[in-house]
Length: 323
Image (cartoon, rainbow, N blue to C red; front, side, top):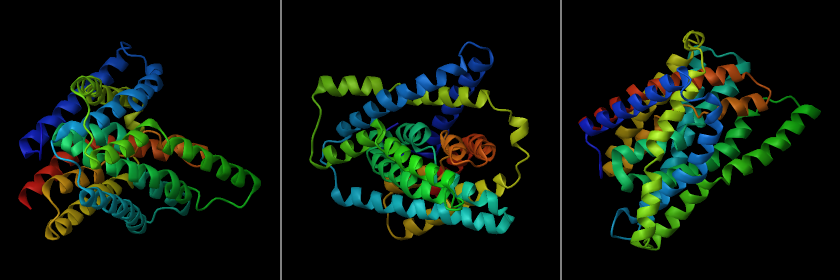
């Protein structure tokens, strides 16, 4: 659907995405889809379909981009990053999180799945115009996550040779991740939109066709990832439930009220809220493991928050309609 999404449209899109996720999960459980395919499919999303979807969004409207709108999206993305961290700190205080787990909670709070789920949801609910705004959020959040985020994760590292080595390696890794095709395409989308560039019809049709694969493929991959996790071992991590309530419901709702009072338009507010409710990124456990910390906790966070987002996003969409 195009433009500012209605509540019924948002629910319809989220139900559809949940069904596609279940198809991916069942397909993997039935061995129709092999979980070994996940890295290759993920690379296809990151290197091909997501960049095409972003670049195709340039032709979403007739007018050139608005510099004020882009700057507002950038500022809101920075604010969102800070609020995500604040939400985690508040949750750790309330639940008396052990010191050894605090940096992990802080990290998974800011490392959200803005690429695999955030962009497809923004596209499905708000159309190409939403993708243009989402591209600014994505570029900003990816940059912050892979710089400040890794500093947060390593904030309690011991001053040892091993810790220093991991720190150097993480800085190199963060630059490699930050300069991935999705981030580059996001930046290119913003710049090209601002200067009023438009693709020729044939190029646009090609980019749009390839980009249209993104949403169903991303949800199938999420389902395949979930199929390899033991849900029963995840649900007992009780601190994740207040974490979700504070980080993905309370903080986004309160911030949405504040932004509404300040006069932020509906489309910007919607994309901001959708990105705020994103689950923990699928790569977060790998980073946590690399830093020598409890990757099982990060994995549990990925599973629980991913499952929860299918209910939370429609709930927040409803909340926006009654503001």
